[in-house]
Amino acid sequence: MCGIVGYIGEQQAAPILLSGLARLEYRGYDSAGIAVYDGTEIQMAKSMGRLKVLEELTHQGETLPGCSGIGHTRWATHGCPSDTNAHPHFNQSGSIVVVHNGIIENYAKLKKNLQNKGYEFLSETDTEVLAHLLDHYYTDDPLAAIEQVMHRVEGSYALGILFKDHPQHIYAARKDSPLVVGHSREGNLIASDVPAMLQYTRKVYYIENEEIVRLSKDQLNFYNIDGEPVEKESTTIDWDIDAAEKGGYEYFMLKEIFEQPKAIRDTISPRLKDDDIVIQELGMTDEEIRQIKRIMIVACGSASYVGQTARYVLEGMARIPVEVDLASEYRYRNPIYEENTLTIIISQSGETADSLAALRDAKAHGSRILAVVNVVGSSIAREADNVLYTWAGPEISVATTKAYSAQLAAFYLLALKFSKVRGTLSEEEFQTLRRDLEQIPEQVEVLLGMQQKIQRFANRYLAADHMFFIGRGIDYAIALEGALKLKEISYLHSEAYTAGELKHGTISLIEEGTLVVALATQEALYAKTISNIVEVKSRGAFVMAVTNFGHKEIEKIADYVIYIPKTNSFFTNSLAIVPLQLFAYYVSLGKGLDVDKPRNLAKSVTVE
Ligand code: AGP
Image (cartoon, protein in one colour):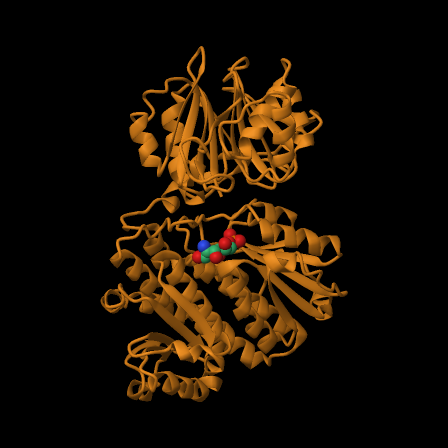
């Protein structure tokens, strides 16, 4: 939700800010803006629409000369996308300018107080409150003003601030929204995420909650909310900028779909040791694993659908009761905390506000927290007791694919590990499953070879109004993700239903030609799902079935069949999801939509 950048150094700031914003557009893209100190004044340019509008407006940054500045790409929360609501926001005299990612929850009250003091507001944003509040507290000490503002505001923020009277510095601060600081010989940078600065430096500092950083062209000073200096260690980023580039693919989503074999391999390989599974990062002794009474999985969106699959896998293999909750519901439902409950938070970004809040709630109630996270050093990773990283690399497309697959792989590892320690699988079963797990990356590669076949099929459904995805057990979890992929990037109404539940109401929506995607990968439930396919077929549905290689007889019922390579039923999600991702991709592409940046969405949901 929104991306912020900042630069101070020897070079022209505007082009650096624009190139940083280009790498953060996945966080929001309804408007963008930059502000640069030109040696006398702070100049600003901002506009509604994608970043390219701002690039054109500023002639790629040329119209805003100067060596220090801040920038923003927006996902609207307070006030619709517009030139006025776009960031940066000034104080009244134009001497302080702010960019902000997050939500100021008490902004209405603060705004009223400031209005009573004579401050005039131009925008509908919560951010403008920060600019005026800074002005209110500012004497001649930017740090002191920032501290006071941080004490007054409630909510979340990552801020970039420029003071006209102190042009040798830019300031940044954070609470519950991500912020990284980069140090290079040519200058210092701030950004919401590492890819925005990778072109200039690999040396980064992660800012903790309620910390402030003051950047000059060759120095970084860190402070806590009370202005006391804080010492920080730098981290060296070891992945390459190429990982965050399209690399010849038309869209990041397609590139990321094709990166899935690697993402899965990179996630499982380091943890496969000899005949065993070793997950050092778990930080749990065998005795602690044996003591687990319950697992609570909490996540949002696709990550929660990984949780749905994980429930079947963990319960089925390790015989541990598992509950799965949507983080946005969990945090307000007053859950019952029991001893020996392991809470697992799943998040690609590691910054999802609801998941982070759920983590804190569970932690405050004494639960041990394991995070399954993709972004190293993210808030969820830092606050969990232990982190099992998914090594999917940077995921840029708003629709998750490779991170989803890597998360599934992480849970297979966990389930196998827990089963072994708790003795719920024989050695032979364990070794067979372990071998099946190792084969998944190659099997995904086979499915990626269906690209053209699926594109042809997808092109027939560009004008469809709605679609249904049905399945039972793990197949239902796959259906949930398949339907979400389609709706988020193709704007096509798609619903996932447990196949057995259709006849309790939803089947009335099936009519001649309605596309039903039927997942039938669970051997134990195959016959039951076939009956449900017959039910929709006889009401006129056109059925695309996804089933295991060998079930040829399904062709007598379904109109179109995709076979996935044989694997254990616990692992079929990793395979069956691939054609569904490609299907969603090609429907979106065929409709001429922006696949990577669907409307109304953002990659990282850092607001409630
Ligand atoms: C999936 O394609 C989505 N864009 C979305 O549902 C996402 O999975 C969800 O917002 C959770 O994000 P996280 O994994 O970064 O926490």
